[in-house]
Amino acid sequence: MYTFRSTLLLVFLLATSCSIGRYHGPTGSFHGLLPCADCPGIACTLTLNADQTYSLEQRNMDREIESTITRGSFQYKRSGRIVLTEQIAGMNHLQVVDETLVLVDDEGQQVRTEFPENYILKREVPEQVTFDDSEDIFFKATGNEPFWMVEIKASGTIHFSALGPEEIDMALPLGNQDPSEAGVLYTYGGAGDAGRIEVITRLNACEDDMSGEARTHTVTVNLQLKDMESPVSYTGCGYHPSPYRLHDIWELVSINGETFDTEGQGIHPYLIMNGLNSTATGSGGCNRINGTFLLRGKTMTFGPFISTKRACPLLDLESRLMESLSGQTWDLEVNEQLTLTQDGQTIIFRPKR
Image (cartoon, rainbow, N blue to C red; front, side, top):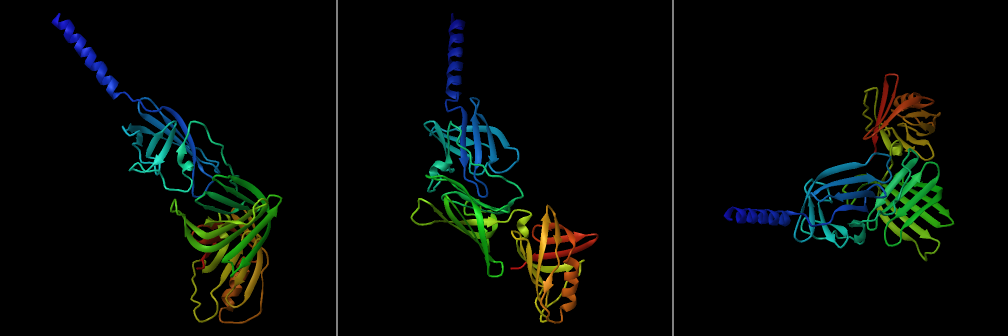
């Protein structure tokens, strides 16, 4: 009898301990479209399992690349907070609120933003915003509060999208580009039945205030839809994706490894490369120069250059540079420098700041 009672007690204690340790929080998949520094959003699917393991799938909405999948375990706090054990920027802490998961910081406070609904994962899959990510993209810019994005296409369109209470997704024909300040500032405009847009870009270092990513341009977008009484302005950061990163002011560094000291002799040679209308202007050292180029993937073919007829101590260098470029096809590499290579020859430029 004693043994039977002891056995019953042991079974009861085991059952009780299992009940206490069992996970009673939400399970299943939760979806969201989170803000992104340089894309229309990051599509996220977080799946919670009853054994307190999870999988997180993330994909940038405008990129033809595979999703990234992170797997691990999580803790469930009495406060209803879920803590993912793996370090995932901005995704480690989530608060259970009804049938949603709200992104919070490590103190349980919700993200401070004008649009907190962009930081909530829900049971239903959100409508997805997509962009065409191809080499046709000439310039790209984004901003936050609300999240917005603009793409200027080399084929002649301006595509603008914004998330928020009233989502905007529109494409207008590119009507003009107006350069100013020797290539430092450009204004791009477009108009159509939906309204008009003006994109003002300035060559100036810019850091995204959410992600901290460094970009090359500060950007202002002025948008006026047909039902607006006055334009709405958006500010943010932008850049030229490859190969249009060459849309910049480049000063000569070297020709076949030879560098040049031009101080007091004239103007150090430089080129203003316009990737949208395929022109190259600037100075060869003594004279203003003008030319064209054809960009095909990672090769660049220059047309003939024309110049003024001034003489100065740098005339030999100018002639050497112009002869090297005019009518020639070069392999192109653009990163921190502009490098042209051809049959063992190399010409290097750097951004002129």
